[in-house]
Length: 54
Image 1 (cartoon, one colour):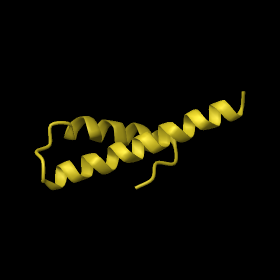
Image 2 (image 1 turned 90 degrees about the vertical axis):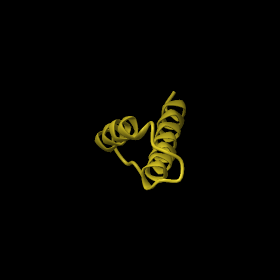
Image 3 (image 1 turned 120 degrees about the vertical axis):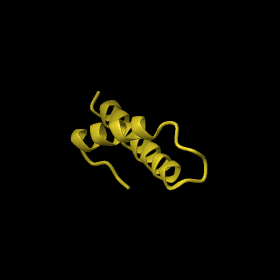
């Protein structure tokens, strides 16, 4: 999963909030982990872009 824009980022964040209490070993927990990784990658890319433009 890759987030490529702010709209996708917002949707992923909202979905992660919905899944926050997912039980370990469930499909929801797997989805949450994938969302969190995609969110972190997007945030890291965004911060990197800001640093490069300063």
